[in-house]
Image (cartoon, rainbow, N blue to C red):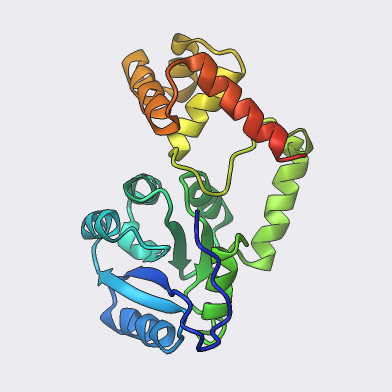
Length: 232
């Protein structure tokens, strides 16, 4: 879980660690300068390349990752999944030049915790990131409207596929778990996700290991408990 980040008071509270990934050194410098000016943020690493970011994030396990969309193209979803898997407790915030709603949805499904425009006022950024550390979403108001429309279409009031905001499971592992809860067999999961049965079995092994469980039935009961607890 992300540790709550209070507004800086000079009381010596621990700072939220941040890694910055951006191909533009001037942009990296501006982000670093703005965050290090605050007492409750600490930039623990930065890089220009997605491949290096995966290694860096896995080593530093930061609370927050700010990643330029251009640095993770042309395979943003894959890169986001790899970054989240390298450090499941890290909130990955994508910074982009524009609001492409379809790309934003895919980024969130891949495990990103938010999507902000690179034109964001840097004076506002620390407040937004404090909100992320305290469980708030980092998305624009326009995109919130899109999420509400999607929620209405999917009937999310039923919590048919509720997932915790922070989880050790990757996006793909949650997809596998969702299908297992719905009663799908290994072959049916493989067909739905367009992967091989062997890949599904590997995902199941990872799910069981991460959850500290020994059977699919245990994992299914866990997911059902998580969904139930969300509405308690």
